[in-house]
Length: 594
Image (tube, rainbow, N blue to C red):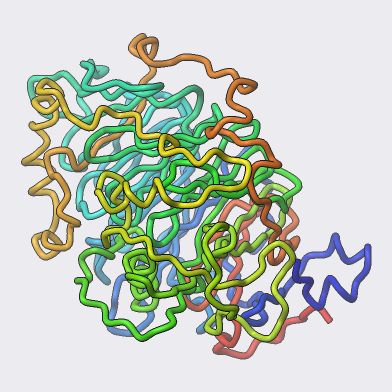
């Protein structure tokens, strides 16, 4: 593991000190103390019993060139600021909007990146009592409140996200284990909704709302046992990854309402989940203190990472440091539409280029291409870990073509133990889609990809459970959403919509009534350990973190990678900006670790 200058010089005492910089192969990341965002009084928040601090970003593309906006919640308060990042010091005296709530607390939020302008933004906010609010912090307006009377769900909102490519559809998960699809244009009704079964599978079911006129929620999913802690859409918007308190990662084909695959934590609940930029890998973290890497194509665990000393609260891929290296110049003839990702914050050319090249990595005939995925994690142990997922882990059995370092992300520093940097050659081909699990190209690839030494080389390891063919009843039941989802997207984005099946384009999950009994069955952890669902520790590679640094006094709740920096936040209510190597743009009188 790479050890930064601070830790190397400090000895045992320094292990408990808060770090203000750390070093990786690409250089030194520095905490910008003057770019810290918090409540205006900068007083640490007493976080006992409060919900996690969360952060959301949006770019409004204003003419000043400073279009970045930040939203964060601290206790009962919600703040909206201009985010100056590495450019200028934060001015906490001038929030664009500030709200204080009574009787409930904000728990999560999400901007609609499609509709954001300098004059107006649509921000969804979930609350501890179960409601969801739609606000415009620029206009300082509150347009709508969903689940106001808590007739749909009475439990805490755990995650809220706009459906990718949509201006009005959004998905909400709850601590009850329910997940619902809403349309901002529809009301929630004055009575509790009644549901009818649309589809069910192993430990999940989907229900539609029975009513004479269209009302919210449009759909309700029931997934697994216990709270649904977080969900994340794939980069192309076609798949949905959910992590639950029962310890399962479940990945669904969002359009077809099909279960694509599952994974079980080593023990305890899973708390967080994220997708690689090309949609080929999913990382989850949780109460087993591990980060687990799952292959979307193979439907199996390919690695675990151990660096945290407590629960892992956030995992995130770094789109800007993930690298692709080709041995020959390549022409990219594919259109940009295959790689659009409305969920990526600040998704500028560099991120889009990385996505394109990652996808081409598996579609290039007989050309050696090397890839390193960078991801990070933060936890309740107050530590930040960075990880590299390299070719020797992804494809351990492929023949070596030559030894070469990743020049675009590495300096002369030696690679960490357990993460030997090599370049492998693959002649396997897939089509160019980010996540096309049902395409012939990827199906053929999944049967030829090498497994870890201890895992059986079996074509049956793919965990797709759905039948793959909708029966007429299900197709009829969903068809009424066709007009809704088709007209819901901006016309200019229609051709860049990954040719989605609009009639099945937006689904949600969960339920709390007796219908749960249809699908919920207890899973014995002892029976999953040692299977493809949950391999033993010795059966898969164990990653070591590139860096593992204590960066806060209280548990960490946020990790977001931006182009010039990465952003972390802790439960005391401090949002920190860490400048990437060479990206500091203004002078700061700050003390660095010596």
